[in-house]
Image (tube, rainbow, N blue to C red; front, side, top):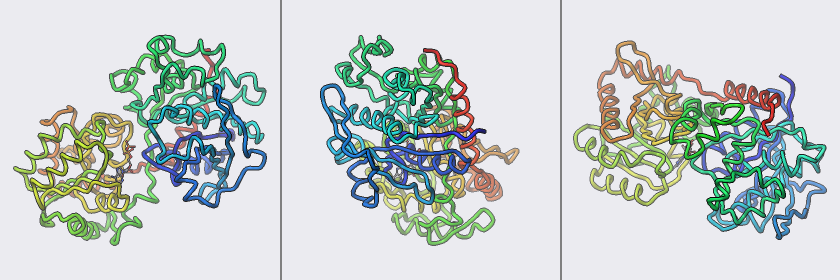
Length: 490
Ligand code: ADP
């Protein structure tokens, strides 16, 4: 394929700033696209935390103290640059202290939409001023979802930008960035306000993600099943129709795994390594996990774990009845690592108190412990209500830790229910979003644990799976090709 000039716009990129899967995808795609021979660059905001941890950023000449007006406010921003680790890919940081010098990446401040509108516009305008307008702006989630409309309206008269195409990737359609219609002036659309969704404006809102879905040349999301779910089921969270009306349908591309970080053969967080051929090391990790977490169950008793954000999406609600009943009747240990909503923290706290030594809970974000949990557990539970892609089930497969997942989104695309009759499959998959279904799936997994030959087959199947980025990057490349060729509706 011809060499493309690609510019990724993302509100977070590993290793600079991360709150979720978006950062992982961005950080993995950049070097892989470069490896395929494309000319790649990226933009992200210069958050306070990034400024503190990256004293080595270099100022970009000619792009210091630039004025950019949003409605009646003039913001001043500067551009800084770093090279993405191990590559010569430039990553540009939009520095606007009045907007990004805050305690967290995302806020509930009234100017939240302005923070990302300024970021998006600054990024687009900087590519012009640096003489490096890309063939494609690859936007991600609501934060940069106004770029496609801006390119077709405000910037359409620019000779440099007129030919630039846009791709929008939806990492989670639950976050749409909805803002009040009173912010209309901030968009600076002039007569092009007519392109916004009239129904939304009438209802007093503007929906950035919906705007991106409507005007991007191509839209992707992070698994094929989620792509179908957001078009055809309530999981589209109101976006079903606008997605279905697109000239080019939404494309689902499963996220890849960074096996440099997540491989039991070389995981830097583990004291003892192991592989499918040499499984002894998993036992050492089992013992260490018990020691670190205070789980008192013997080494012959399986441990089921969870590592997750505590959000409604993750399906913890259906565990409220199921888990205590299972712990009371079956022999297994349970470990949860996570942080977020108080009611889930309270649930796991109470569980650990009610089943001392059998259930453990760590309320934290702990990267190192997450690796030990993958290595030292026997099963990994993801009962998600919805899951655009999910990464932990793919990590679990590689660590021989049997995933127990609900059939939704990326979980459905990466775990196949094990069939003892044929010996094919990689985990336990359940359909219904309710307590009986999760009880069935956990019970089935525990039964398999007691049948050593079957368990061994299942673990070998799991560990043989390959979800590396190489294949997936080719699929993004195809999408870029389609965006270049896309006819435009309006
Ligand atoms: P989401 O982006 O919806 O949170 P993903 O499964 O795509 O879900 O990605 C979550 C990532 O964050 C995984 O790498 C997971 O291991 C990590 N993670 C989530 N919660 C924690 C935690 N409490 N401690 C350590 N890592 C966590």
